[in-house]
Length: 356
Image 1 (cartoon, one colour):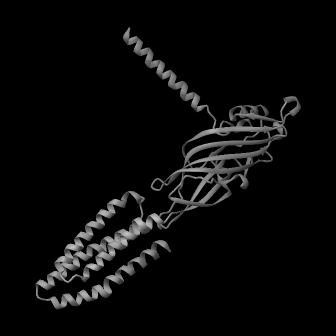
Image 2 (cartoon, helix red, strand yellow):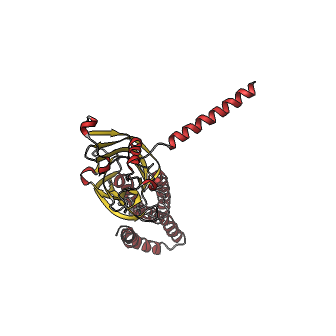
Image 3 (cartoon, helix red, strand yellow):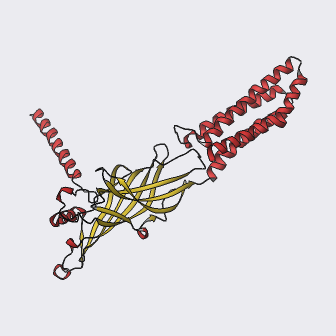
């Protein structure tokens, strides 16, 4: 009896999970349930759809994964005369539909609906609210507020932390331009006032329209909201670059000590400070497959700081072998010319190679 009861519970659980999966798969995102096989009108003239995109929040920016999270709204405006109705007979000049009910209504009339995808979306789109407003004249407005993760393949961090990045939210039609043509609505597009992003300064939003090769392999309409961003530099200047300059200055200052043994001790201590500093800031650096400007600074400073130890050991050896005059002569050139020119030359090379 106990085995039979457990068997019944297991199969009941499988049945419930299957029902949930079916119910979730049946939920439409936008007009995603429309099928092109049912279209019998408007094939000669494409349906012109105005699209507005408003980003209200930036939830995160993942530099290593090259993606970012948004809370955004999409507004679509179109005119479909086949869906016009008699306002007096209906009792209202407008109808409010859920996307699912509106798709059923459009199927009955055999008209095209602007099924769309967010082209650079990763994972699911979590719709918070969506509705369709149908006016008696056949004017239609679709509104959707959602949150999702978007791919940012145009990120380039070679100039990090002085880099500037471009972000996109791309809305593409599922159907070719012979059925649907997207046009931007600039007045309903842009960035919100409270984006919640503290690391980046976001600016210059603009709508971009282009024709791409769609998932059907035919020319397809796409609109995108693009915007640019650069970093708040105070953190990087005070927490990264200033300590690096101090470590370099202390390394150079050890040459003013007369005793070579004390120089070696100071250079060793400075090298350990640099290694500890590198570990401390490693969590703030993007892990990439190529070097950035800051990576080049860290690598160069490590080489220069480490060479201080080797040079002072060599000078100490010359003094032990009674060649102190040669050691002092070399010392003067190192202090006055070699290391200052090495610092300046390395910084100029890094700036020219990574920033220009």
